[in-house]
Image 1 (cartoon, chains in turn blue, yellow):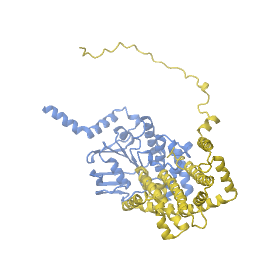
Image 2 (image 1 turned 30 degrees about the horizontal axis):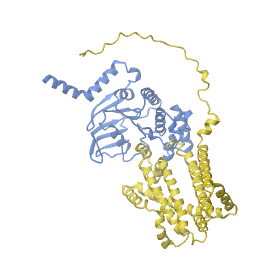
Image 3 (image 1 turned 90 degrees about the vertical axis):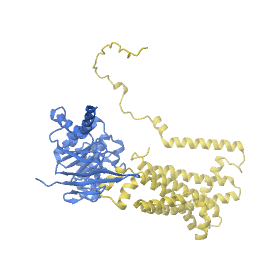
Length: 264
Length: 295
């Protein structure tokens, strides 16, 4: 058994709004292994994005610990490249190529010539070679997302953090992007921590699914979704897993309603 | 009383169909270059030139109708004086004196603004300090500080530079700070994600991301500085050794030489136009327009 790449233990996360102290998650445990496609799934308000931000190093846990390769996470770093939902994550003053190059350049992780070669290679991998010298404002949403993914992948991070990356895309583009992400994973076997609120997307993308319950976010279940992808959407296993997750997320309230109806 | 839902009319089944695509070659290329006339009409320079020419025609016609050179000289007369003073070097000399002072004051003002805003974004306390200072000093007319400047620095360039710095600093600092505040959270996070901190974070993320409003600050600062300088020269250019363009206007007014006053004003306007539509326009085209941050 390999030791976990990312270990999250008893993590409680709180943040302040101007008027309230909000508890986003309460004592969440999970661990991510090398080459996992680990999906955090939950309804809005379950603190899944907050968990991702904490792993990214943007917010320290109130209690508990987050470790990557045995080291406690203290600040943001390029070993955990993030891909956000918003297209604003790209720098509008840089071309596609310069955007992809930027992290490698500022971290000096690779020599200049190697960084340039890597940037070109990864741009080709996401099929944007023709748009290499174009500024982001001229790209479609899907292309912008490809650039963001390429930028993160070029750094070869220990773990790729994706915060609902396809949520702002139209349904057709989303499907294409999901397939592309999976085929990239087939080639490179990187580790990815993926946040989504879509049960279908979680099953298609994920190899493991962590189901969180809302207010505050607590772990409800961790499920195996290995081997299920777009081709298995119509299959019974897919439907069973979907129903199971659905009842994990909404089941209690349904039963409650049913009981109340019986009593009445 | 007719509570019944409206009856669905017996539906005729519409036939499905598939057709061969219409030949679209008749419309020509899908992407067609615009004709020269179309491009000229859309060209900003052409549009601006048309506006200028119209204004000049109105000026000329009005001045001729008024027929009083002392009150309102014609455009042709103004141009005659203007080219005469350009030819004998007086106007160029005066303008260069003004521009030199302006350049020093503008550069120092920008440097100070950079330092102040960098300190301001580093902490919340810094932001409070800067926004309070800006709120205090931005509305204070630079000209009102001139008497004080004269007491502190005496007659001459240092006093002028002082009031120019005052007029540039707050406008640029305020706009830069507003720009920094408007940088989207996601963009900030993707900068911090790769480990950027401190001055590199400001230089590589905040400044380019806030560039549209920084540029607006630079433009406002430039205009403030230019008008402050000309006004200041009008007030005490009299006693300075080599006067600037304000002094040129002041002298001409004393001689009741209205055409020369006009030619001085024309020089002020022309420099304003050139800086705005050549210098700043070029910066815009290479930055915010290219990056799609501004149309």
